[in-house]
Image 1: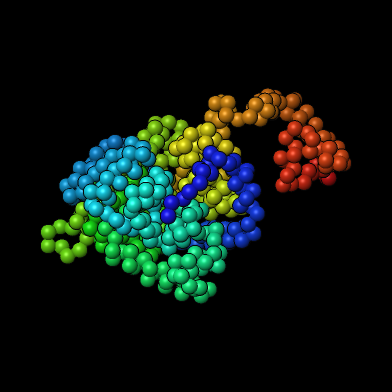
Image 2: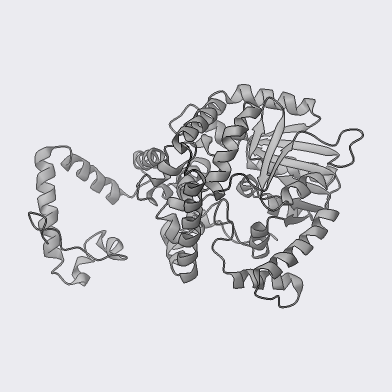
Length: 466
């Protein structure tokens, strides 16, 4: 179930993708409704708690983990190997794919079941395995539907937030070979029956990792559907793909990080299933995989350490910033063109894929700071977005006209006299322009794009009256 076609990040612009998404009435209703629900659930979850103090604890834990990453990774690797786990290091996405393909090939794997993993989306794992003739089955219900449609997840937590129930029914009906009822319970029941067969016959299970506990050599996985435990215990081989930054120093750190992850992500006290995986089946144990592999993925993460954007490595992939972002709430995740959407995607994509591919995304933000306020580990996303914008200008990636205009604006507003003069000119100019036919105004360089989705205001009169 490969995802054919060109890479949307390099074959189109954010504006083009956003325009396409804005033309979908259901998306513009469904995404704000779902994100409002998630944010309200987060507020209810921590209503009687000092959420800010818990966030500060989370920030300190994640900052320590990233600041001393080499030390904690060495401890994690040693503990995993003591537990009988084979550990692999992948410098980039190509190496990660090569390692996992080799493990599957050595295991004689013909069918792989997967738990939802943004890291596996990041490295393009499914198409690589399918090219080897391996059947890959996504077992999270949302990811399963996305896979059936050759689509991409549109939210870190809710992959099919952009789809109607009718679209989901159509996708599952194609698999069933018959028209399924328009009933959520019936659709879920069909998917459950279909995926159960995959669980029982899979040779290899692949998961992500919410956290890797260094002191105990434990992979922590949180799920709500039970598919995580099926994928990691029934197949004879289990592979966990973990971004190197997801390490936690101590087991006790989960007492802080789990409530933050589940509360910020879904508003739950805790997810239905929290699995702590500490190695393959031991002698005398009746179940579990015969082999367990952990692939530690770098893919640009190490390069961010010690730099201006190190704080982004604190991210625990809860999706809370997406839920409050006014831009994401209107255009959804697909407009961002890659794996990660919303404010965190606008930071990660240019850092992981480069400014040429993702440099425009930091501009897909109002810089309102809502993402800073909601982030469970206090990542200053607003500052990171602003920094990336500045980097783009310094690197001459921004259009020349934009750079000239920004320089003139900066010069004008750096002096009180020119600031006041520019404000007066803007007030008089907009009042005059509002009386001019819109067709003439649109001929002014840059005006057509600005007026494409808004009316030109008349401007306030002195004293605040229009």
